[in-house]
Image (tube, rainbow, N blue to C red):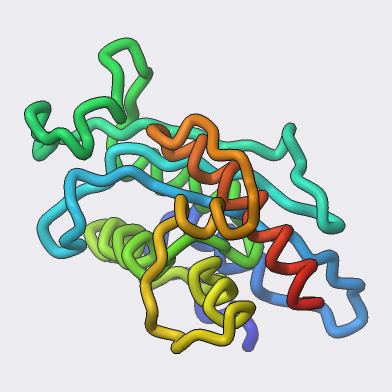
Length: 201
């Protein structure tokens, strides 16, 4: 589908740039890039809660690209400092950005990569809700869920929910820095590569 309809519209340039990544030349060699990401939120309700931080890391040629890294902290009003689950996520000395700027930077980072996360649906919907607040469309990226891949490897029912810690234990992967989005993204990337190898995908 051509993107000619964008010309002359009031869509912001960053959104046009994002959509342009999905306009493929049939003769162009496609290089597969994955972006494994995680986010910390004020809760688990995508309608009412907000994103506190996003961490992401790129994978190319079945290897984690340490230099292909993204982390951002978001200014917010709904964060409850008394919540045990989320109180250690955002430190006072972290530089924070408004949600719109954080989403722009995230889109600029992911481009047309395949997105990977553990129990990815909530993360995707949180991003889509942020895009909706900017009066834009939904994410166009293809995506993969490490929980679903784990169920496939274990031959379990696909809607079974298993925590990232449980998956790490099953795969004998060391868990590190599990209190930050970037730490979770790195651990999820290790899980993804191991499952990808085991499943031959």
